[in-house]
Image: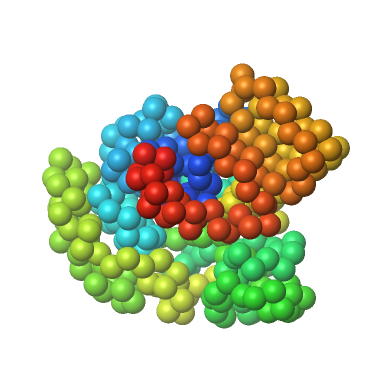
Length: 361
């Protein structure tokens, strides 16, 4: 069992979620939305998922500076020092390095869990048990641990982790990280039994990850090291505002994980989805007998099947003869789009911007 006093959680909540347009907007991205229709935002659900692991005072949110007020509104338990405001979007490596420096200044013995704010986990008890096991392993050994998801289908939308030897039960050495594959490759990965989905959930001691940045990504390390005396003081934000935008735009996978020799993975069957698109939301939500996900109180779906329909609660919506469509009504924007072509939605926002400006983004 890990020592919860030294366990900290960093929840990454800075993205825009453009594949969830028009629900997810620049001013209010998907992590701040009640996407699942539960009455709670994805960020709130993620925060509550970690409360049994450590006190609320040990949970930090890394977000874009523009979303500070939104975070505060949804997580009133947090102090201002627990909300890290990034002045620019530079991918996950700088945001994780920044958080590690800040936590090391608070508690040199800190062990850190890094998780995205917009994923869903259906088996929460199993998830926490895996995190506990990862914390225990990372505390005893100088290792970088990632939670790997046992694949349930040959998905081409995820990166994969190839596992090697098993030094202790349920913990595997990572041989390599693999980019998103084509369908045949994905099928071979799943058939091999050696490959896991890369969920972007990490566990390590802050000193271990800082050493990895120093050795493998010294450009990032040296920028944040300049602020050593400023973390958790009034000087932190001005320092970050000036220096953070100069960090390279790079993922933590490319910056350190793919280069490090001490990376391990714990396979986890936790009912996980990264909820990346409207179709993945449709896949995860309860459906009516026709396979429709209906989010709204007055929906009449006639001869309609396999659709995701998300409309204002007080609006009467009548649909007929739709099959495999996404229908999202946000008041000022109505999207009706084939579910099979939903990967185009991200590009669609560029077209909208071209024709109508930024008002609808």
